[in-house]
Image: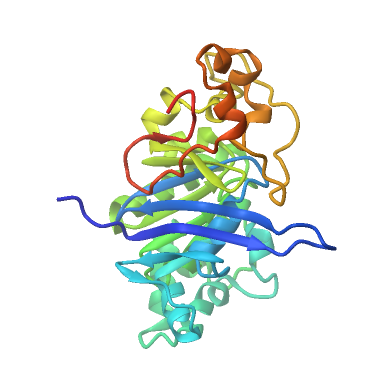
Length: 323
């Protein structure tokens, strides 16, 4: 029997009011997504595709317009006390440690902040030391009185991770966790996240535009375009044999890609004016090359939206040609 997911989004929609009479923007549009216990899921897509809004909705920072988020079998409540309890179990790791750490706070104060907010009943010093140690800052006491400007970029990111770990969460949501780091440090932070999964049983959703990062860390990948998941499945399957033309284009520009780079024309459409049919069709290389015409699906691509993907663990693609 398959274990139920730790976190599940069902029919999630997030719509923002339009400005100056413009139509509302559908930032997240009919998303189903599951994250299992001890699983790392990479949420991948271009800037502006809705992945950060989806992450903030899963964290309870943005209430969905419709749909629901379930954690450990219980629907997420948006009452203040319930949200406070939820955010102890689900922690955010931000992209830029320099921006998320108060330059006037020592490392100790930065990590202890969450304990104080949640009224931690135990030994604060011991909890801070344990979190720093688990984040790879050893011996932890050596870092207690240091300030962010005295640390390297990788050390600052470890402090941010320690600040999340100090509350013993079950799930981390990491938004571009290594984007601001040097290449030499990126691998260390990714290895840390993997070790936390293996040693503590932590689940994680890693939000990234980098499919190479997804390959190195994720168990499953979900590819997002214009508010919807367009392809999802085990990372080896999706990234070695991508089916959606958008996933293929993203992979083609990686340095190690065996195929010629696919240059996507134009920017993603405005989420307040989502096109008819497949929302990717105006940029789709399969449609532009005539492949969709030869397969007899070009009219469907232009006029019929593909089915919304479910949140299950198997490989799925929202594409008339490859579905």
